[in-house]
Length: 215
Length: 215
Image (tube, rainbow over all chains, first blue to last red; front, top):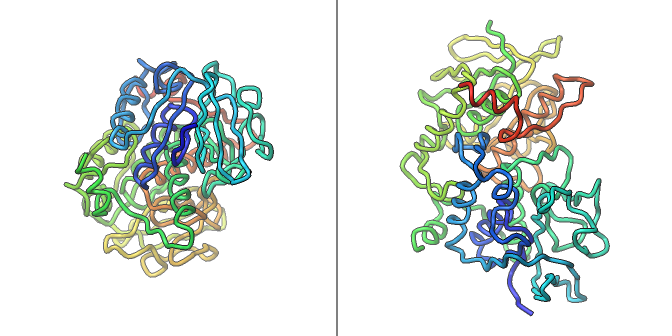
């Protein structure tokens, strides 16, 4: 049993950026993916296709995007476990969650982030793909989340990217990235309890500038 | 009086990306800004400071980000009117909105997008900065919007970026970009009326690929 701050299921763009955002807030992630390389749909379907609607990137192909996202998260050294499928999430009586993989590995953390996208075969995320804890709410096989924290109906289980639904949801990369940022901030706030958590900016915060300058 | 599909107030990153997203959906924008160059805070405060938390851009300074966003929106040829401050928004009986500038220019459109950020002097957007139509809801001088369409309490007036508030709101660029995308899709849907509007992807949609390949 390995323990960490957060388990991210899915090493696509949403999962990689989630680990980056959690890293900014001081949380160490383990990322699990059934594929043999990170990148999810981007690597599998758009590796050599230009994506035109990412802000500040007039045209970037999927492979290059995944390379940049990986480079970005590298400084936080998430543990990335590939070629091993998450088969179930279980919630213990202590409120912590355990994720077990097909190979029998077991990871435990107070927070799980489901970032599975459409899955390796283009199907929407569903109960058939992974055994989820009872109490999770689904709508047309997508996980229902709030738009404040991107948390599911089960406390501590968050979900972002193409696997989720909420009013207005679009399956856009830019939305997955926003969801990752709000999720990470919400987790940081929950860990801080009563303590006030200020928002900081990577260009001006001394703490953040030190993180990025040091690595 | 100039007429267009949408008037965007603010030529910062949120405003530029809003025009880009509206362009994808076939809407022609006019962008107004009181500053003499586009870029908002990014150009004014972070021109030479690296930003580390934009997905796929491990480190980019404000000036370069504004250059890339401008390049991206250029293909949709928005009319960008600089050095002229929007002084009021007025809603006509026909439901269309008019925006008047300090120099006396008047623009009319069915949709207005407030993307003013913190304004040129670092103050939060407030009634003192611009005369807004009655009925707009404010919370601590930020415009309250829903998280489905990023529309204010006044139909047809949308708001995105640092000027807005909603549960969980963080003043992050990545959030402003997500807000712009959902706002643009909501406007497209409203224009379509009863007609179903499918979500399309820039990498796979023939329509979108043609837009980007042609320019």
